[in-house]
Image 1 (tube, rainbow, N blue to C red):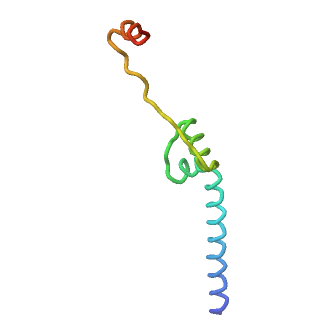
Image 2 (image 1 turned 90 degrees about the vertical axis):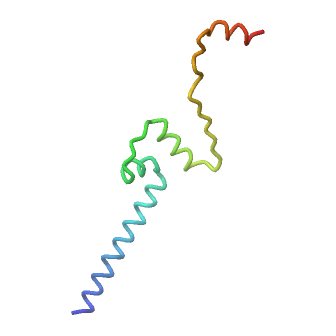
Image 3 (image 1 turned 90 degrees about the horizontal axis):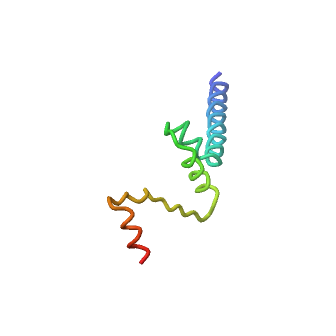
Length: 83
């Protein structure tokens, strides 16, 4: 009787480990899904694309800028920068 119980216990843990391995391989292929489903992080489309490309490519560079703050005398700044 105890042999049967250990066998079912082993098969339960083996099944659980197999399922875990499948989930890990799925999340490695889809890091944006991992962030959304497992971590609970809501990402914008461009962030999902960035995560996906970071996972797929060996080299990745993303240059982000917040933008230029408006100059109070913007036409003057533009004219001065041309000269």
